[in-house]
Image (cartoon, rainbow, N blue to C red; front, top):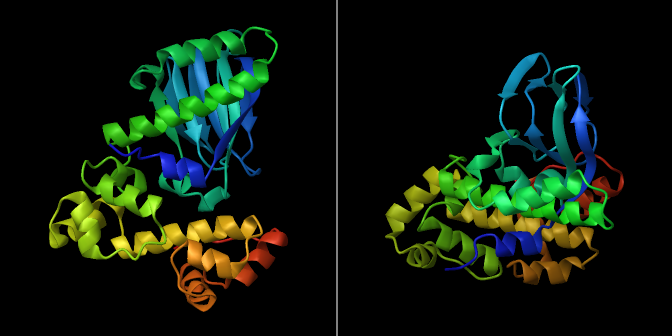
Length: 283
């Protein structure tokens, strides 16, 4: 069976960098004004998670808290006993335009026992986090990245995301069409061909795809291609070569599709990026 995450992670990298390990006591505010998401692992302790004035979760067992994109949050713990945390910043290449970050809920809270097969990695991560071994930070960064992949597997398998790309990747048939598009974005995909990959009739495939992924296969393919084009632009690739690589016959065709998805031309998008203006993801 094709690896559902291989093309996504090859094209849009995710990196982690640990910034805290130890006990947090009382009230701790974490601002959401940066460019990174965060992944918190709670080893022990009771934690009240607040989003503004609203209670978002109450942690009473070892758990993970995932914020794919920047979001202000607050942890309340016992002022004396506190709770043991290991925390990392997450950088999704492309920020909000990263298809994995865009597909994830804004906040995910799961007990660590829900991550099947993750116990050895988590045990190693906690052991490293609370020791003082050489190479500790580099090792923890890699272990956080592994945990995040296990979270993605979990969300695809247990139906934790109801609509969107990850929901489609969790479907036993639709995933085959999605992987085909991810692997070969330049191919001239027809609805019939994609339905064939999924082993479904054209009408059943189209309806199932729209219901599960939240858009038509054609719209999804365009978003995927534009996301790849944005990534290539950031890496300095010439527009005429990008057009060929992502499945558009000419620079003009890519520019039209880009503007339809992003509301601006590729050159305007690059200029806005260089000026640090807010950038829209593919719509």
